[in-house]
Image (cartoon, rainbow, N blue to C red; front, top):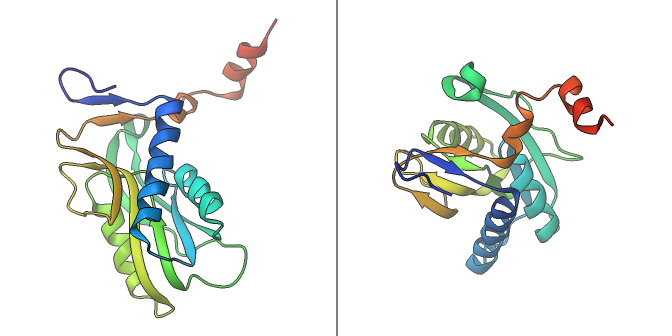
Length: 173
């Protein structure tokens, strides 16, 4: 649900799952055949996992981080993992890069530039749930464009400030 001022978008689990399924359908409708999926942790892990299952393709993971301060709402220095985690082999062939959103576009652009420098990758396309209006990077596949660039409140953020003791209270009798 987008707030009246256009500054916040609140997404339920059901909406999140539907967006992920719509993303899978967009990729499928394109007819593009890919060999592997690389998701960006943490935001791209959930959609990457679903797409990996739907397309029956191996899933690789690359950690990135830029949002740290103020409960993850302030963007700072971008860190990209040195290594990509995958069950076997190397990232190669036609690769679908998956993340949750193209916010400023800085992270996706940096990852794409790094991956395009890897000789084993023949073709690379990117897929996200949301593209914000301020994004400088336009992925190949997306579900929603958000012209007002709202802050997206994703359903799993409830765990950002939840610690084991708080979780234990939930189950206390």
